[in-house]
Amino acid sequence: MDEEELQPDEITIDSHDLQVMRDSVDTMQQQLSRALRDIQEIRAMVNQAAAQRELERHGKNPDTINRRCPK
Image (cartoon, rainbow, N blue to C red):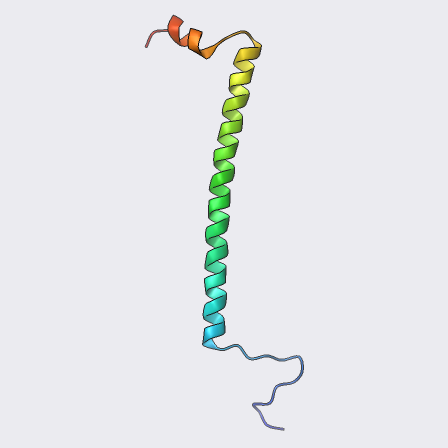
């Protein structure tokens, strides 16, 4: 049996295959980073909206608070 002959459950991976895999991993990492940034932005907006709603529930309009408390 020739050493270069592969068994049915074996494959060869060349440098091009490795580069394609690296590129895919890089792309996935970039997508994950963007998704995490998006999640952080959404979380901040939700927290801001919740704080705004809490102020409104207690009858405190932030605009009137700012007018009462000059900078």
